[in-house]
Length: 217
Image (cartoon, rainbow, N blue to C red; front, side, top):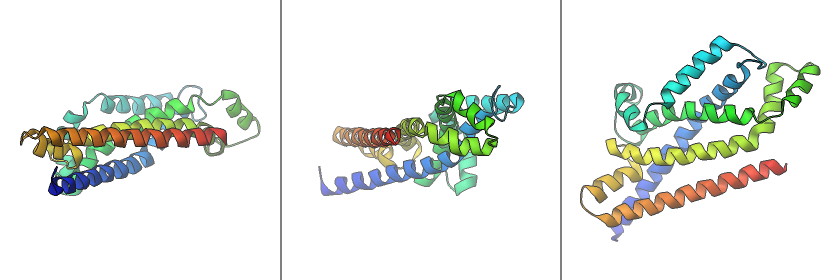
């Protein structure tokens, strides 16, 4: 493989990491509180509000049901409004964030449900406020599970970022399509697949190690 193609691969890898990292940070800032809200407002929750829970849950389920490739195309006008363009790595982050928020919300909700209810009851009996229960009981106790769940989200984002290449989103997916598929260069396709596999394995390894470390604390 030529030096020019190696340069393109490194550039595409950097774009993919940029897309995934920034999208994950933004989505987590919104998705984690969303998951807490879904858990605490359910029936029997510390902030029980079934109406609100059903409304939020319905929206989350609706967004999660949309295939990512369709979501990318459907929100092109919104993407253009937000970042001024519908193509490129920055533009690709808009659908990535929108797709990840409900995913993270449900994953966090699942992790919080693993916390023994006895701990919540104990905190309530000592007069803890809902905010104190969330910050001092629910999140610390569920953090190892949340980290494991977020690792899964990051891996999904890697795959979706590659899919974003189908509409000029940049990154390894865009490189594979433009240089590998359209120019009939299978070695480019193979190289991008190998890089993606290595990237996913690295993310999974680090996520698992961090989760195990938190469980031992």
